[in-house]
Each structure stands twice: as C-alpha cells, then as structure tokens.
Image (tube, helix red, strand yellow):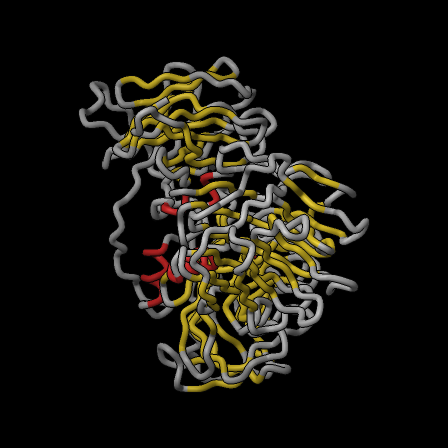
Length: 616
C-alpha cells in the first residue's frame, strides 16, 4: 500500500500476468474503486514503492521466471510505464512470482539466485558512499529518417546515419514540401522501397511519423509508411475504415491479428497534416497523433505485447500488395521506441536532419542498477516521459459498466464494482475482436440469445434522468422483427425503454414509455446502419427530452417530461423481439445523470469513453 497526493492505494499481483491497483476514496464511509492495471507475461508481485523528484509514487515490480525477469516501474496514480526494463546486464535469473525487496539509503534492493541487485533511485539526501554508475544510452532511437531534399535522382538518403537508402519507384520530386523538397505519389503505382534491413525488423515498441498532404481519396487505405502485407506487420496510413478518411496506425501480434487505432480527425484533401503512430509494447498501448496532439478514436483488435516482423520490405507510399497513397509525403521518421508527445511535437516542428529543440516536459527520474558486494550487473535505464490521463469524471453516477471481454458463454461482469452481473441466457454468446480488447459476439440464433439481469428491480430509472453508451456492429439485418440492443421493454403494456435496430428502416431507434400508460416518445437516427461497421450509440433522458446520438453526432431529440413506467421487467442486452446478430462492446449505464453532447464526444473519441484502464 502507498499514499500519493491523490489518495491512498493498494496494489497486488492479479493472476499470472497483471498488476492491479485500487484506490481508497476519501468519502465517509470510504469505498474501494479500481485505479489502474498493467499486463505483462510473468508479472511478479509489487515489492517496493519510491518517489521521484516531483513526489510522484513509483511502484516497482520484477518479472518472474516465465516473464522477462527485469525491473519495471509504474506511476502510482495512473499505472503509466515509468521504466519498462531492458537495461544492460539487468537480467535477474530465477526470479519468483512472489518477490520481496526493500528500500534503504536511496536504493532499492532485490535478491535472486544468490545475488543482490541494487538500484539507485532519486533521493532528497545523497547516499553516504557514492557508487559509480555508468550511463547507458536511451532504450532505442531513430533508426531511419528521410527529408527528401535530394530533389533529383532515383534514391533517397537516410538522415539517421544508418545508411538505409530508399529506391524511388514512380514517385516524382517537387519543391513544395513541408520543409524544402518532397516526393509526390500518384496513388496507383509510385512508392519508395527501403528494403528489409535488420534495423527495421523490429518486434517491440516503435514510433512512425511524417508530414503528408493528400490529393485524392483512395478507395481503401492510403499507406504512408508500412512494413506489412494482408497477414501481419505495421502501418501508418489514412483509412476509410471508420467512415470518412482518418489517420490510422496498425500493428500485429499474430497472423491476421491486427490492432488498429484510428484518429478522430477527418483528413481533408490538399491540407498538410503531421501524423504519428506510437506503439508501446510494455504498456500495450497504440496511439495516433495528429498535428502533435494525441487523437485516439476507434480501436479495433487487441494490442499485443510484441509485434510480428512481417517478412516484407518497408515501403513509403504503399504496403506490400498495394494500398497506394495519393499526394505528397515529407519528413518520414521511424524509431524503435515509443516517443512522448513532447518528442513528437519537437519532430513535427523540426526538419529531418536538424537538431531538435529540447522538449520541456517534467522528466521522470529512473532507476540505476549498480553493483553490490555480491556479484551483480550495472546499467542506467532512461524512461520516456508519459503524460498522465485526465481524471475519470465518467465514474460519477455510473450505475453499471460492462467491458464484455469475457469468454464465450460467460456472464457479463459489472466492471463498475456494483455487482450487477448479466447472465448468458439461451444459446452461447461468443467472443470476437472489439473496440477495446474483445467484444461479445451474438449469433442471432435460437430467437432468445441475450444477456440479462436476473433482478427485475435493477436498471429502473423512474423520474430520474439516465444515460447510456455502447458500441455495436451488425453482422445481419433483422429478418422478421426489430433487433433489441438493450431494454426493459416487455411484456406488452409494461414497457419502459428500448434501443433497437428497426426491422423496416434499418435505423437505430430509441423509445420510452411513461408511467401513466398514455404517453411515449421515440427518436431514430437518420442514417441506415451498415453491416460490418462499428457504431457508437449514446443518449438517454434528461427529464425534459429523450436524445440519441450515433458516432458523436448532434443529438436527435423528442420531448418527454413524465416519469417512466416501471414494468418490472429484466434488463437485457442483445434481444427484444429478435436477437442481435453482431457484436457489442463497452456498455455503460448512468442513473441520475444526463450526459452532455461534449461528454458523448469524449466517449466516442476515447474508444470506450471511460478511461478503461480503471477497469482493466
């Protein structure tokens, strides 16, 4: 357990591959709420906490024998990775799941395999006996960079100093780049081939960035820089996968197992954008930055702990098999580590080949392994500053939250901690790739496939405002009746509220019935839902109007000012009249809270809405 300026926490080893922290609230009486969780194969027990130079608590962990057996540090408030392990000679053989350590005299100590490892940490007073500590280089750096300032010829030079020369195939030189000259790509046959050098065969963290100006919308992805085919690899691109063309970044942890993050920014034509993708393997995060700002939108697939090296060449302007970019590309950089936002902004404002300005974030002090009287190894790892996420205001009046990450056939666990479990009712509900991690896969068979609450008093709102938010993907349209997405809406004459896909119009619709049995209201989204596309659906009742929004669009509203009927029905996901044939993910429900248009936009733009690390 430990205390920070934000409160009291306790943290423990949660299974074989996670560390989870919980916060004790300052309320009377106090309650325990999820704070953060981190995943890594072979994670050991947390065994000591320290503070850095700004009094942030750091939780230190050593990976156990079936993991990496290295030191890891996590921010005590957020779980952000402070140090990801990997210093020279840092491997500690024969570590165990249940590790014990101490902190003394400005150092933390750990024993394994008849050795004692000492790690120097920042302290307010100097250590009486200084121990020499060699300084290691940062864990990874720029491996390839191209400013395209040659202006002529059939090759581009690597400004990183690693000599990874690119061969130009069909792209043409122009003088109007973002900084100096650039290359123009025709969208059908032109690209730059960097080959498949060892330095670019990376399986860990990476950052990719470039300045781009699109001239036309391709039918599918427009690859900026990629080492990928249809089965595996990494990509920085533009994409219409979420509807309009946005920026995207993708990595794969297995064959066809892509995790893809899309921006919320819609890419306009003939406009310069700086796009950057960041994959942090240790933290298992995948972020997209547009013009120096993190711009995370929809996430599909599961972010892997390492990525597959696809056995294809690195290309600028396309990937293996096509998907050509149409427009201008300039200032391409490839790193073998995860950059911070400050570093991305420095690159954005600095031409390739020029010394970057010094970033100004508050640095995060790091551990320095040093020798002790028993045989040991030394190294000085350097952590990348990690911005802390904003506070999770969406927890206020949260009634229930379902990540829907469970195995096939399992009940849906209420991640809010309120215990409102939903049972798999009828045929087995499977699992599939989701917006965050996995989703539940409804087959639409059997007529009664659903997840429901056994308590008929739960999810009744009465005269209280309420709100909802979830993601849904339709695999098939209704074949005989409306598809209920969630509701308390039967039997006939006792209906309360329902969100469904209309069997006739194929539009997402929200209906509500009044307690007097006379009044009701309904709204429908104006666009027909497409098959195979994820939609974010949100809305509710504010006491005066019911409202519905899809993909953060402006609310469609209808007046409704009387309390709702209490029909005494079960709350259900995935069924009413006809079962859902499709996927559902990240369902949240609030009572006595009406989410605003701005908050709906925040939900949509953050993928799940809630800072889901609170529940992970």
